[in-house]
Length: 87
Image 1 (cartoon, helix red, strand yellow):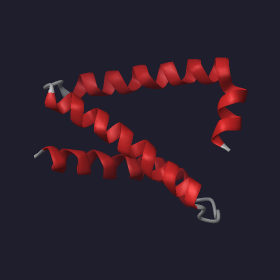
Image 2 (cartoon, helix red, strand yellow):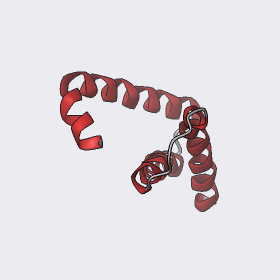
Image 3 (tube, helix red, strand yellow):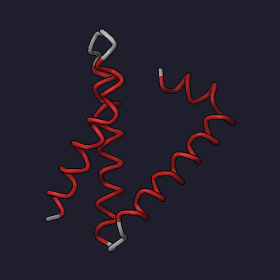
């Protein structure tokens, strides 16, 4: 059951994160593929963790939104260092 939940969220996040990349004709580098798989895997593990502790779906969305706000504020503060690390 937990593996199925992880696979569901993993595939869902891969679709979400890869959709804007479908329009771009970019060479497939191993680093970009790693990013494409690592971020959805981490988010999928987070969602599975929230499923295990019986957090309802709406609270999962709120948790993701809170993480998004934290990431945006972090990027706002440390944007140049993050962009250098990311490249």
